[in-house]
Image (tube, rainbow, N blue to C red; front, side, top):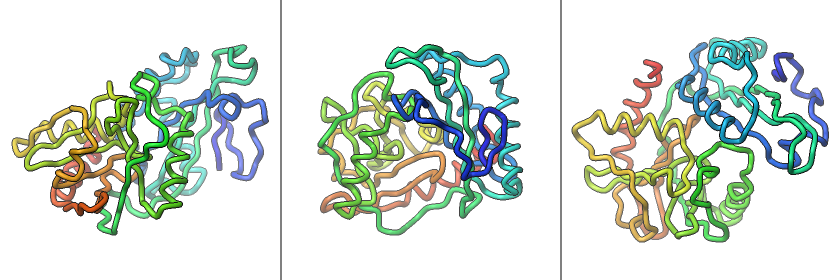
Amino acid sequence: MINFNGSLFPEDQKIFTYTNRGLKYGDALFETLRCVNGTLFFWEDHYFRLMASMRILRMEIPMEFTLEFLEEEIKRTIAANQATDKAVRVRLTVFRNEGGLYAPETNEISYCIETSLLDSPFYTIDEADYEVELFKDYYVNKDMLSNLKTTNKILNVVASVYAKENGYANCLLVNTDKEVVETINGNLFLVTGNTIKTPPLSDGSLNGIIRKKLMEVIQATEEFQLLEESISPFELQKADELFITNSITGIQPISKYRKKTFANVIAKKLVGKLNAKARMGS
């Protein structure tokens, strides 16, 4: 079942038309999160990121769009899919209502909630081969719009096609200054010794929720030093580890980049702390 503006529809029900602004202009935002046994992982962070993003895009936030209202709508959708006691992937999409060309006729919005089952209730480390390559055909802009989780993801789509055609698991995206920013589907962390580095938002990286939470985890330990600094492509092969973070996978180690293979020792240490933080809801 799909939740469209509070009404539940079967998955095969046609609920959008060709006038949808998300389709025509990518005029939409989305949040993807985990829900396990009725608990939404890091829900407050997702909610406040969505509200901030809607303000940046001049979308009108409905009065009923409270933290509690949207949480209840998500849980109601999960229950309608008989998945309350399971691990679930949730996608909440918000889009400006139809009308207008580039200039919208209204800033009022609609929302859609969809769910699918996940294999594991917790974040786990996948130790299968995971090779990546730089994608240099197109670049991420160094601006605030790149920090937002919008449906304007054509660069990520083309990079995904490139990765599939060339047998890579993922690609590293670079910005207009040729700095490594993120991957197709998540933020990037680089480990050298006891130093863990991730690109700053000012480089154009997504303002990821797991990025934020993992940075909190790292800062709370005495074992590691966290740096929020630009990453040059030349640093990649000198690193001990590279890994990706996102709200569904948690932490995905990169096993190979060009001729360099990487360990996943630190990734394994951090995933347990991330699971603990998710269970605490903080």
